[in-house]
Picture 1: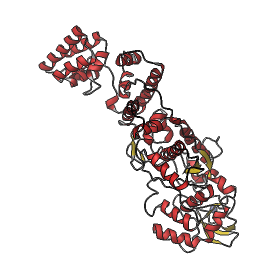
Picture 2 (picture 1 turned 135 degrees about the vertical axis):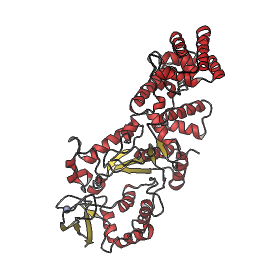
Picture 3 (picture 1 turned 90 degrees about the vertical axis):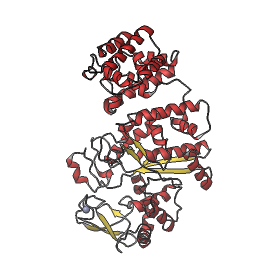
Picture 4 (picture 1 turned 180 degrees about the horizontal axis):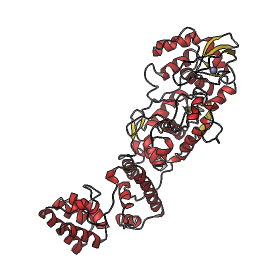
Length: 510
Ligand SMILES: [Zn+2]
């Protein structure tokens, strides 16, 4: 069974088919890494699978704008250093236009999510705190601080001092939240200190005071905030990356706090593996080409969704824009489309439906392989549409032309920005230097191939068979591209003007 249908089945078994709430979140501490799209895609797919099984559901996506600025993205101006430790919603927007830092980076990510065909309801965690919805949870957590310290110790092995309370106040003097420590609670007010050296990434001001922790003046640490939000929002389904999902990890601690302190059963879990870029799990602050927007811009939504949904949730995804990833994804897409023509009820068919926004599967159509499109768009003398019609054996339909032009556009984009050397071809105007020193035997074979093309005007298959007799592909690639490998030689030689191909082969055989 397709993984999203399987998880949806587990959800229905526990909750039935009405009013299911799915949640995911992200802290917009900078440009959002594409890895965060895996959570969006998995929760989005579960939502779609539930709907397909007749289960009413809502997918809520939170931006955690109360989290402190605890890392410094390298693309930020130095003057932003002073905001380290402040809640992200209190840091100004880098462009001076958005309401604040969190809004600015959340907006870019929202656009990627929408463009990819997912439509969660977005909200900011500050709405939960400022509206007073978290107040009751804060009161419970403060009065059960001892239980929470015990759970931390028993589940994760993390030992907190006896005066540690699971809450951080926004310092009234300096506005930072990452530097404060609550030291007591009298039922109304908390006492706190703004510590100079609580964390490495921000320095507190030393202020000590007493303040009401309610109505947006304080926030929970991550592992306590998580279960508090489950209860306040009514979350029934929420997965998390495997870094949070280990035994004794954040999810485990949160589930214990939910049950033992907040009297709420943890949601249905869906732990998932990482989405790596070029083999690395880069942070939001580093790395060219690893933000959600940069990767989403490289491929159309259906191919992006295939990258995100094409593997089981517990398999890592590696997206390498500088490697084979994009042509391989396109080949995978074409294979799914081909199978979908005849089989509509297996896992591949389900995947094919899920990768199209709104499950709008296009009608069956002829396509040219992406790697071939990428080659043709580099050849000034070749007409992509004519070439496609030769391959198809008839005129292209409107949808086929649209798909082809989309592939050409994305191929050009990829070739300019990332494509590995083996996909980049330049047809040389003159015989390349590397093709001037073939052996007498090699020259004789090239002359023979030139004769064959000139007299027979062979089809790609006929020429391919002829070339196989000689096995001299490398010499041909050297003569045209100054490279040792290339696309199917029979195909590209027949696509060249005959005069040009024959002339070049003869020059190489001189
Ligand atoms: Zn302070």
